[in-house]
Figure 1 (cartoon, helix red, strand yellow):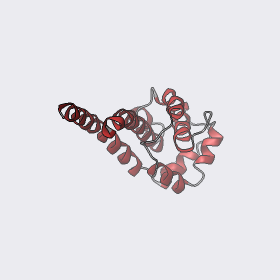
Figure 2 (cartoon, one colour; figure 1 turned 120 degrees about the vertical axis):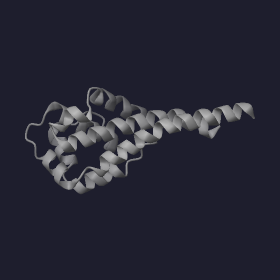
Figure 3 (cartoon, helix red, strand yellow; figure 1 turned 180 degrees about the vertical axis):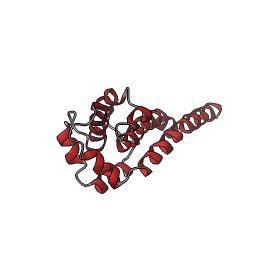
Figure 4 (cartoon, helix red, strand yellow; figure 1 turned 45 degrees about the horizontal axis):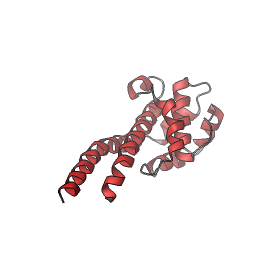
Length: 148
């Protein structure tokens, strides 16, 4: 019984770490609107960081096998509202290992502050991607503890 309680406490503590990441991801999505996505997708030659964050969305949302180029990123955002809905409805608890492996190198150096000057939509997408990945890592560590 003591071991079960210890495992429950460990799982609870880990989940407490995960929840702020999920809240930040949700807050980032709430900041997205059709106008900002439309603005982002109309960039002719965006900063590499903008391409990287949208390509990271491609890995997460569509489980793309390779990094999307800008034209493919623009196609993914063709319907801004659908793109936002896809982001909002994303299942952060079940991300395949390969998708995470593809996503992480793209977001390693990205942060909201540095992205704001490039594109507000890209900045909010950065917050979403970074926090979804953080949440998933904690969740996948905690899920087995919860099951026990």
